[in-house]
Length: 367
Image (cartoon, rainbow, N blue to C red; front, side):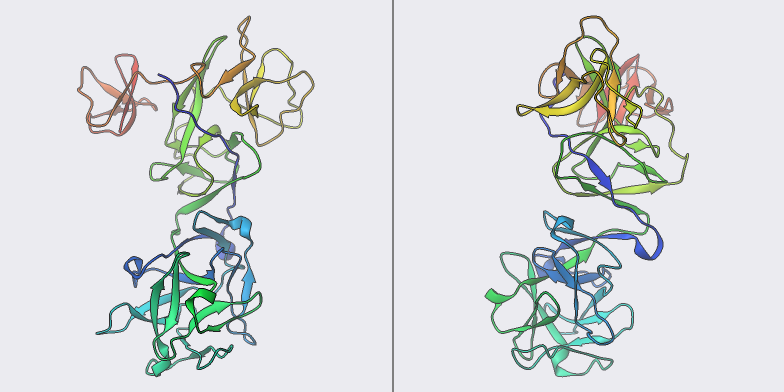
Protein backbone atom coordinates (compact mmCIF):
# COMPACT_ATOMS: atom_id res chain seq x y z
CA UNK A 1 0.00 0.00 0.00
CA UNK A 2 1.37 3.41 -0.96
CA UNK A 3 1.63 5.94 1.84
CA UNK A 4 -0.41 9.06 1.15
CA UNK A 5 1.80 12.10 0.63
CA UNK A 6 2.34 14.15 3.76
CA UNK A 7 4.64 16.60 5.54
CA UNK A 8 6.54 15.66 8.66
CA UNK A 9 7.18 18.43 11.15
CA UNK A 10 8.83 18.55 14.54
CA UNK A 11 6.27 18.79 17.32
CA UNK A 12 7.48 20.53 20.45
CA UNK A 13 5.62 19.59 23.62
CA UNK A 14 4.83 22.78 25.49
CA UNK A 15 3.72 21.15 28.71
CA UNK A 16 3.85 22.51 32.23
CA UNK A 17 2.05 21.43 35.37
CA UNK A 18 0.10 23.07 38.17
CA UNK A 19 -0.55 26.82 38.05
CA UNK A 20 1.35 27.33 34.81
CA UNK A 21 -0.23 24.52 32.81
CA UNK A 22 -0.67 25.20 29.12
CA UNK A 23 -4.20 26.01 28.04
CA UNK A 24 -5.50 25.89 24.49
CA UNK A 25 -8.26 28.24 23.33
CA UNK A 26 -10.20 28.06 20.07
CA UNK A 27 -11.58 31.19 18.43
CA UNK A 28 -15.37 31.52 18.58
CA UNK A 29 -17.01 32.45 15.28
CA UNK A 30 -20.69 32.74 16.26
CA UNK A 31 -23.04 32.75 19.24
CA UNK A 32 -24.19 29.22 18.34
CA UNK A 33 -20.89 27.94 19.75
CA UNK A 34 -21.44 29.46 23.19
CA UNK A 35 -21.91 27.07 26.11
CA UNK A 36 -22.44 28.49 29.62
CA UNK A 37 -20.43 25.61 31.08
CA UNK A 38 -17.30 26.53 29.10
CA UNK A 39 -14.56 29.00 29.98
CA UNK A 40 -13.55 31.88 27.68
CA UNK A 41 -10.96 34.62 27.23
CA UNK A 42 -10.91 37.80 25.17
CA UNK A 43 -7.88 38.18 22.92
CA UNK A 44 -6.80 40.08 19.83
CA UNK A 45 -7.90 38.56 16.52
CA UNK A 46 -4.39 37.22 15.83
CA UNK A 47 -3.84 35.97 19.38
CA UNK A 48 -1.06 38.48 20.01
CA UNK A 49 -2.64 40.06 23.10
CA UNK A 50 -5.05 38.65 25.64
CA UNK A 51 -6.92 39.93 28.66
CA UNK A 52 -4.93 39.82 31.89
CA UNK A 53 -6.04 42.30 34.50
CA UNK A 54 -4.15 43.69 37.47
CA UNK A 55 -5.37 45.61 40.50
CA UNK A 56 -4.31 48.91 38.91
CA UNK A 57 -5.33 47.97 35.35
CA UNK A 58 -8.27 45.56 35.46
CA UNK A 59 -8.43 45.41 31.65
CA UNK A 60 -4.74 45.23 30.79
CA UNK A 61 -3.33 43.05 27.99
CA UNK A 62 -0.62 40.42 28.09
CA UNK A 63 1.56 39.56 25.08
CA UNK A 64 1.01 35.88 24.29
CA UNK A 65 2.95 36.02 21.02
CA UNK A 66 1.84 35.27 17.47
CA UNK A 67 3.85 32.04 17.47
CA UNK A 68 1.27 30.62 19.88
CA UNK A 69 -1.59 31.39 17.48
CA UNK A 70 -2.14 28.79 14.74
CA UNK A 71 -5.25 28.27 12.62
CA UNK A 72 -7.61 29.88 15.11
CA UNK A 73 -6.09 28.23 18.20
CA UNK A 74 -4.35 30.22 20.92
CA UNK A 75 -1.90 28.50 23.26
CA UNK A 76 -1.12 30.29 26.50
CA UNK A 77 -0.06 29.53 30.05
CA UNK A 78 -1.97 31.05 32.92
CA UNK A 79 0.87 33.55 33.27
CA UNK A 80 -0.18 34.80 29.81
CA UNK A 81 -3.95 34.61 30.24
CA UNK A 82 -5.19 34.87 33.81
CA UNK A 83 -8.69 36.21 33.29
CA UNK A 84 -10.91 33.33 32.30
CA UNK A 85 -14.56 34.33 32.08
CA UNK A 86 -17.92 32.61 31.93
CA UNK A 87 -20.74 33.73 29.66
CA UNK A 88 -23.91 33.84 31.73
CA UNK A 89 -27.06 33.89 29.55
CA UNK A 90 -29.52 36.71 30.19
CA UNK A 91 -32.96 35.19 30.67
CA UNK A 92 -35.44 36.02 27.94
CA UNK A 93 -32.89 37.61 25.60
CA UNK A 94 -31.35 35.84 22.58
CA UNK A 95 -27.56 35.68 22.35
CA UNK A 96 -27.20 38.06 25.28
CA UNK A 97 -24.77 37.38 28.12
CA UNK A 98 -23.12 38.71 31.24
CA UNK A 99 -19.31 38.41 31.22
CA UNK A 100 -18.38 37.04 34.64
CA UNK A 101 -14.82 36.49 35.84
CA UNK A 102 -14.16 32.98 37.14
CA UNK A 103 -11.62 34.11 39.74
CA UNK A 104 -13.67 36.73 41.63
CA UNK A 105 -17.22 36.44 40.20
CA UNK A 106 -17.21 40.11 39.14
CA UNK A 107 -18.90 41.31 35.94
CA UNK A 108 -17.57 43.37 33.03
CA UNK A 109 -19.49 46.63 32.62
CA UNK A 110 -19.57 48.36 29.25
CA UNK A 111 -18.13 51.78 28.53
CA UNK A 112 -20.24 54.85 27.81
CA UNK A 113 -18.00 56.51 25.21
CA UNK A 114 -15.17 55.71 22.81
CA UNK A 115 -12.81 55.54 25.78
CA UNK A 116 -11.16 53.04 28.12
CA UNK A 117 -13.92 53.16 30.70
CA UNK A 118 -14.68 49.48 30.97
CA UNK A 119 -15.17 48.60 34.61
CA UNK A 120 -15.88 45.73 36.99
CA UNK A 121 -18.84 45.40 39.31
CA UNK A 122 -20.29 42.85 41.73
CA UNK A 123 -23.85 43.89 40.86
CA UNK A 124 -25.66 42.00 38.11
CA UNK A 125 -28.41 44.58 37.65
CA UNK A 126 -26.52 47.38 35.90
CA UNK A 127 -27.92 48.12 32.41
CA UNK A 128 -24.41 48.16 30.90
CA UNK A 129 -23.68 44.55 31.86
CA UNK A 130 -25.36 42.87 28.92
CA UNK A 131 -23.29 41.84 25.89
CA UNK A 132 -24.04 40.45 22.45
CA UNK A 133 -21.82 38.03 20.51
CA UNK A 134 -21.49 39.44 16.98
CA UNK A 135 -19.79 37.49 14.18
CA UNK A 136 -17.39 39.05 11.69
CA UNK A 137 -14.81 37.77 9.21
CA UNK A 138 -12.21 37.16 11.95
CA UNK A 139 -14.31 35.63 14.71
CA UNK A 140 -16.89 36.76 17.26
CA UNK A 141 -16.78 40.29 18.71
CA UNK A 142 -18.35 41.39 22.00
CA UNK A 143 -20.79 44.33 21.82
CA UNK A 144 -22.47 46.07 24.76
CA UNK A 145 -26.25 46.17 24.28
CA UNK A 146 -26.65 49.46 26.19
CA UNK A 147 -23.91 51.51 24.52
CA UNK A 148 -23.45 49.60 21.21
CA UNK A 149 -19.68 49.81 21.81
CA UNK A 150 -17.39 46.85 21.12
CA UNK A 151 -14.60 45.55 23.33
CA UNK A 152 -11.26 45.98 21.58
CA UNK A 153 -7.61 46.20 22.57
CA UNK A 154 -4.44 48.19 22.23
CA UNK A 155 -1.00 46.82 23.06
CA UNK A 156 -1.51 47.67 26.74
CA UNK A 157 -5.21 47.77 27.59
CA UNK A 158 -8.69 46.77 26.47
CA UNK A 159 -11.13 49.55 25.65
CA UNK A 160 -14.25 50.35 23.62
CA UNK A 161 -14.78 51.13 19.93
CA UNK A 162 -17.83 52.40 18.08
CA UNK A 163 -17.60 50.39 14.84
CA UNK A 164 -17.02 46.70 14.32
CA UNK A 165 -14.58 47.37 11.48
CA UNK A 166 -12.09 48.81 13.97
CA UNK A 167 -12.45 46.03 16.53
CA UNK A 168 -9.38 43.82 16.90
CA UNK A 169 -10.44 41.51 19.72
CA UNK A 170 -12.43 38.27 19.63
CA UNK A 171 -13.79 35.63 21.95
CA UNK A 172 -11.86 32.38 22.50
CA UNK A 173 -13.13 29.21 24.18
CA UNK A 174 -10.88 27.02 26.31
CA UNK A 175 -10.73 23.53 24.81
CA UNK A 176 -8.15 21.76 27.01
CA UNK A 177 -9.16 19.75 30.06
CA UNK A 178 -7.24 18.78 33.17
CA UNK A 179 -6.19 15.43 31.71
CA UNK A 180 -4.99 16.82 28.35
CA UNK A 181 -1.57 17.73 27.04
CA UNK A 182 -0.99 20.25 24.26
CA UNK A 183 1.38 19.55 21.39
CA UNK A 184 2.51 22.42 19.17
CA UNK A 185 3.91 22.07 15.66
CA UNK A 186 7.38 23.52 15.19
CA UNK A 187 7.12 25.68 12.08
CA UNK A 188 10.78 25.77 11.15
CA UNK A 189 11.65 22.24 10.07
CA UNK A 190 10.36 18.93 8.78
CA UNK A 191 11.28 16.02 10.99
CA UNK A 192 10.20 13.45 13.55
CA UNK A 193 10.35 13.60 17.29
CA UNK A 194 10.78 11.91 20.64
CA UNK A 195 8.10 12.47 23.26
CA UNK A 196 10.12 13.81 26.16
CA UNK A 197 7.71 14.81 28.93
CA UNK A 198 7.02 12.76 32.03
CA UNK A 199 3.81 11.09 30.96
CA UNK A 200 2.49 8.48 28.56
CA UNK A 201 0.10 9.48 25.78
CA UNK A 202 -3.15 8.43 24.15
CA UNK A 203 -3.78 9.83 20.67
CA UNK A 204 -7.11 8.07 20.05
CA UNK A 205 -9.03 11.36 20.12
CA UNK A 206 -6.32 13.60 18.64
CA UNK A 207 -7.92 14.91 15.47
CA UNK A 208 -5.71 15.63 12.48
CA UNK A 209 -2.54 14.02 13.82
CA UNK A 210 -1.21 10.55 13.06
CA UNK A 211 1.56 8.86 15.02
CA UNK A 212 3.79 6.19 13.46
CA UNK A 213 6.57 3.85 14.48
CA UNK A 214 8.82 1.96 12.08
CA UNK A 215 8.58 -1.83 12.26
CA UNK A 216 10.86 -2.86 9.40
CA UNK A 217 13.49 -1.37 7.10
CA UNK A 218 15.51 -3.09 4.42
CA UNK A 219 17.42 -2.12 1.29
CA UNK A 220 14.27 -1.21 -0.65
CA UNK A 221 11.45 -0.35 1.80
CA UNK A 222 10.64 1.24 5.17
CA UNK A 223 7.45 0.03 6.87
CA UNK A 224 5.42 2.34 9.12
CA UNK A 225 2.76 1.30 11.62
CA UNK A 226 0.22 3.72 13.08
CA UNK A 227 -0.12 3.67 16.87
CA UNK A 228 -2.58 5.34 19.24
CA UNK A 229 -0.78 5.00 22.56
CA UNK A 230 2.86 5.87 23.17
CA UNK A 231 5.09 5.60 26.20
CA UNK A 232 7.04 8.64 27.36
CA UNK A 233 10.32 8.93 25.48
CA UNK A 234 9.26 6.80 22.51
CA UNK A 235 10.74 7.86 19.15
CA UNK A 236 7.93 8.33 16.63
CA UNK A 237 7.08 9.91 13.29
CA UNK A 238 4.31 12.52 13.41
CA UNK A 239 2.03 13.41 10.53
CA UNK A 240 -0.28 16.41 10.36
CA UNK A 241 -0.73 19.99 9.28
CA UNK A 242 0.80 22.81 11.28
CA UNK A 243 -1.39 23.31 14.32
CA UNK A 244 -1.84 22.76 18.02
CA UNK A 245 -3.00 19.28 19.00
CA UNK A 246 -4.53 17.81 22.14
CA UNK A 247 -3.49 14.41 23.45
CA UNK A 248 -4.72 12.55 26.50
CA UNK A 249 -2.38 12.02 29.43
CA UNK A 250 -1.90 8.47 30.63
CA UNK A 251 -0.40 7.21 33.87
CA UNK A 252 3.28 6.40 33.54
CA UNK A 253 3.95 2.82 32.40
CA UNK A 254 0.25 2.21 31.76
CA UNK A 255 0.90 1.95 28.00
CA UNK A 256 2.58 -1.22 26.67
CA UNK A 257 6.07 -0.75 25.30
CA UNK A 258 6.28 -0.83 21.49
CA UNK A 259 8.90 -3.53 21.26
CA UNK A 260 8.62 -3.78 17.46
CA UNK A 261 9.67 -0.13 16.99
CA UNK A 262 13.10 0.08 15.33
CA UNK A 263 13.34 3.88 15.36
CA UNK A 264 16.29 5.10 17.42
CA UNK A 265 16.96 8.30 19.36
CA UNK A 266 19.53 10.86 18.37
CA UNK A 267 21.91 12.36 20.89
CA UNK A 268 25.15 14.25 21.47
CA UNK A 269 27.20 11.13 20.69
CA UNK A 270 25.15 9.87 17.72
CA UNK A 271 26.66 10.44 14.27
CA UNK A 272 26.00 9.22 10.77
CA UNK A 273 28.35 6.67 9.28
CA UNK A 274 27.66 7.40 5.62
CA UNK A 275 26.40 3.86 5.09
CA UNK A 276 23.74 2.51 7.47
CA UNK A 277 22.27 5.53 9.31
CA UNK A 278 19.19 7.34 7.94
CA UNK A 279 17.30 10.39 9.23
CA UNK A 280 14.21 12.28 8.07
CA UNK A 281 14.90 15.37 6.00
CA UNK A 282 13.51 17.46 3.15
CA UNK A 283 15.61 17.93 0.01
CA UNK A 284 14.41 19.49 -3.23
CA UNK A 285 10.83 19.36 -1.99
CA UNK A 286 10.94 15.64 -1.16
CA UNK A 287 10.58 14.29 2.37
CA UNK A 288 12.00 10.96 3.36
CA UNK A 289 14.72 8.98 5.10
CA UNK A 290 18.06 10.15 3.74
CA UNK A 291 21.41 8.48 4.40
CA UNK A 292 23.32 10.56 6.95
CA UNK A 293 26.85 11.49 5.95
CA UNK A 294 29.73 10.25 8.05
CA UNK A 295 30.43 12.50 11.04
CA UNK A 296 27.12 14.42 10.85
CA UNK A 297 25.43 14.51 14.25
CA UNK A 298 21.87 13.28 14.73
CA UNK A 299 20.84 15.59 17.60
CA UNK A 300 18.70 14.83 20.61
CA UNK A 301 15.01 15.14 19.84
CA UNK A 302 15.46 13.60 16.39
CA UNK A 303 15.07 9.99 15.37
CA UNK A 304 16.98 7.80 12.95
CA UNK A 305 17.10 4.33 11.42
CA UNK A 306 19.87 1.82 10.96
CA UNK A 307 19.58 -0.21 7.73
CA UNK A 308 22.30 -2.81 7.46
CA UNK A 309 21.21 -4.34 4.15
CA UNK A 310 23.81 -4.25 1.40
CA UNK A 311 23.03 -1.84 -1.44
CA UNK A 312 20.25 -0.05 0.50
CA UNK A 313 18.76 2.98 -1.20
CA UNK A 314 20.23 6.38 -0.39
CA UNK A 315 16.73 7.88 -0.08
CA UNK A 316 13.37 6.42 0.99
CA UNK A 317 10.62 8.70 -0.31
CA UNK A 318 7.52 9.21 1.87
CA UNK A 319 5.67 10.13 -1.30
CA UNK A 320 6.75 7.02 -3.17
CA UNK A 321 6.66 3.27 -2.93
CA UNK A 322 9.73 3.12 -0.70
CA UNK A 323 7.72 3.91 2.46
CA UNK A 324 4.58 1.89 3.16
CA UNK A 325 2.01 1.39 5.87
CA UNK A 326 2.45 -1.98 7.48
CA UNK A 327 -1.15 -3.12 7.04
CA UNK A 328 -2.76 -5.48 4.58
CA UNK A 329 -6.21 -3.94 4.23
CA UNK A 330 -8.17 -0.89 5.38
CA UNK A 331 -11.77 -1.32 6.55
CA UNK A 332 -14.25 1.46 7.28
CA UNK A 333 -16.55 -0.95 9.11
CA UNK A 334 -16.25 -4.18 11.06
CA UNK A 335 -13.68 -6.72 9.91
CA UNK A 336 -15.19 -10.04 8.88
CA UNK A 337 -13.54 -12.33 11.44
CA UNK A 338 -11.67 -15.30 9.98
CA UNK A 339 -9.88 -16.24 13.15
CA UNK A 340 -8.89 -14.69 16.44
CA UNK A 341 -7.88 -11.00 16.28
CA UNK A 342 -5.29 -9.21 18.40
CA UNK A 343 -4.24 -5.59 18.80
CA UNK A 344 -0.63 -4.52 18.38
CA UNK A 345 -0.02 -5.21 22.09
CA UNK A 346 -1.00 -8.87 21.70
CA UNK A 347 -4.39 -8.56 23.42
CA UNK A 348 -7.31 -10.40 21.85
CA UNK A 349 -10.05 -8.08 20.53
CA UNK A 350 -13.47 -8.36 18.88
CA UNK A 351 -14.44 -7.28 15.37
CA UNK A 352 -15.74 -3.98 16.79
CA UNK A 353 -12.23 -2.92 17.77
CA UNK A 354 -11.00 0.26 16.03
CA UNK A 355 -7.38 0.49 14.95
CA UNK A 356 -4.70 -1.91 13.80
CA UNK A 357 -5.44 -5.59 14.41
CA UNK A 358 -3.52 -8.75 13.61
CA UNK A 359 -5.40 -11.75 12.24
CA UNK A 360 -3.84 -14.90 10.84
CA UNK A 361 -0.45 -13.25 10.84
CA UNK A 362 -1.57 -10.19 8.83
CA UNK A 363 -2.25 -6.60 9.91
CA UNK A 364 -5.52 -4.79 9.17
CA UNK A 365 -6.65 -1.24 9.89
CA UNK A 366 -10.26 -1.11 11.11
CA UNK A 367 -11.64 2.46 11.20
